[in-house]
Length: 267
Ligand SMILES: C[S@@+](CC[C@H](N)C(=O)[O-])C[C@H]1O[C@@H](n2cnc3c(N)ncnc32)[C@H](O)[C@@H]1O
Image 1 (cartoon, protein in one colour):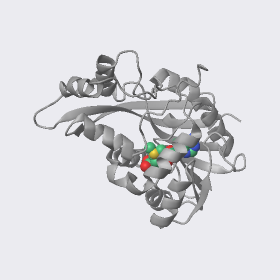
Image 2: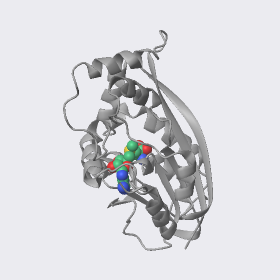
Image 3: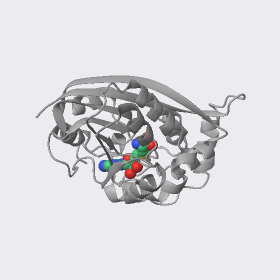
Image 4: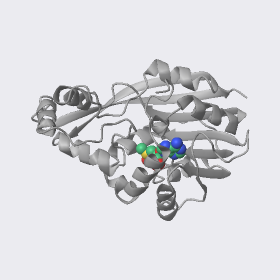
């Protein structure tokens, strides 16, 4: 496996899974919506100009980007045609819609003032390539605001599976903060990363797994083991996970959310 491409995830699978989830996504997207609102509150882009929501999904952030930043032109891009169709039909924004891979966006170099991207780049195989592409798209004074997930995300699920099914991976890998910073620096002179843990509570681990599936965010590595689970493994994982239970709230899932501010695009 190429060391840079630590999750071997097919773009087609990402696109298909998210496209299939478009209709139900918003009901299950409490993590995504909290993160997107936090990212919007942190955005310091001047109003006007041309802006891009990269990996817009169902378009949750688009109305607020339009209201908050009053761009001359708002562009919404996503790998999944299903997500773009949904966002275009439901968000009521005046945007230009693009089905595009974040590492290869069909826009002119130096054409954007800002880029916003919430919980998209953790799905990309090569974060450095996406950083270089964002730098290419931005004007010299342009900036990018991202939210992504880093190492330590879903740690309870990873350790419960490690106990129940040793030696077999069941959870997507996430970059460490240092790896993320190094890859983003391929595109930008100044990289600021704030990592904030966010804990969400579920009635049980099956509710967490169901939510990940509804979101199109289940484990996707191409090298994942596709055979049936050995007998009793799922039950063993549930038992291991249940040790985290708090009688007041249920079981926790931890998300390590990185809020990223990028300036000084390398051109
Ligand atoms: C977790 S969703 C987040 C959507 C939206 N930004 C939000 O906050 O609700 C991730 C989105 O990224 C898109 N995506 C994943 N890989 C991508 C890529 N390489 N290029 C563009 N979009 C991608 C998926 O199709 C999906 O819509």
